[in-house]
Length: 280
Image (cartoon, rainbow, N blue to C red; front, side, top):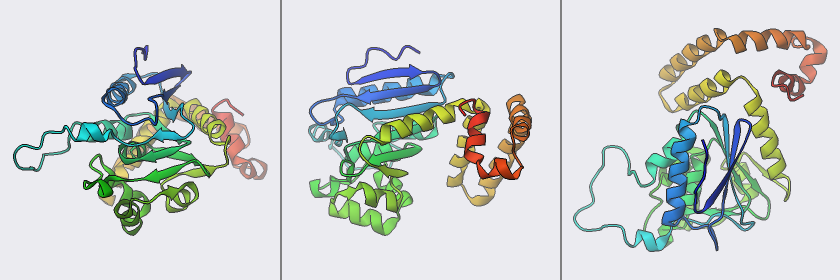
């Protein structure tokens, strides 16, 4: 994949990790050009069999993504009655689901404000990391007289709980990085300058592990949305598949060779795991 000719994104591929940087001044509003870039990127990433991890970040130190362009929402068609759709609006739901379900690990490196549709997109990623004093989450739709219509009313209660989602969404309040970490919106909140190095370390670490294990484990984790019995069936089936792979057989044997299941090895299991990905 070339990942070229984006108006508002720059994309770099390093090994099996892709990094996309948003640059849509002044505050990274999701204007039609940025939406089109994010949509096209999701399709290209989904089709790229060489990648295992994708990281989205921002060139703007104050804003990850502000929100969706309100002037564009004012142009949405409103003739006739509202109606139920079979699944979702292709405008946003499908794109968010693609980032959530693609067979790559998706990471949002949120080092500034994120709100509205930007928050909804970030909540569709597998992981989110923020920065104390810089990362603030705000769902500003209810004060505008609308609601978070790009997956937000469904994603946020699942992440932080219904009562907390009600506070954030109904109040239009800022959720700071420490609160977002404590409530489960962020994986971690870092001091300034620490998020980028950690995200890059984690992305490279994941990308160094057996490809089949990364892809099928994400598939298994996604099954947690199903009833428990169905999710357990999926997990068992995917586990059996991985036990039959060459990489699984190789790495399990290597684990024992480098000190797994010894007292010394088990006390430094994170380091041993890194050896299995050739990172140390």
